[in-house]
Length: 116
Image 1 (cartoon, rainbow, N blue to C red):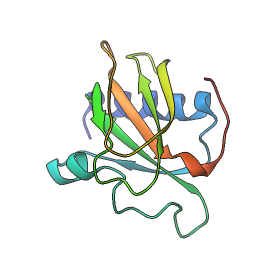
Image 2 (cartoon, rainbow, N blue to C red):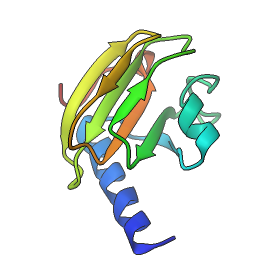
Image 3 (cartoon, one colour):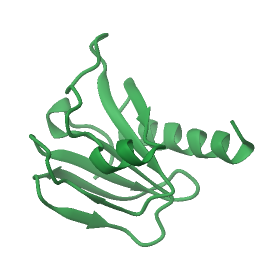
Image 4 (spheres, one colour):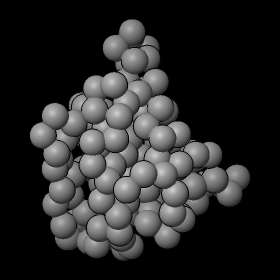
């Protein structure tokens, strides 16, 4: 893993903590298929009972096509700060944020917490 990747992982973990989305099983979408389908088809909770969160590094726009449930979407800045948080975004929507360095997603049914 490169230094840039470690920095990205650190900012994602910082954002998860700031959002109150921990503990969570973190899935980092690095390949084309993971990035295309995102949370679609993923279980709402990991086997160990933790919430599932998905990170999209180097991303500033996402869609909710093919989702079976609403998701929470957080746009993260280069320092790990939460730039925008969209709660319970229904299927077939599009969200973006200029200046975002990464995006975090989770199923909206996984509870409240963190900043708005």
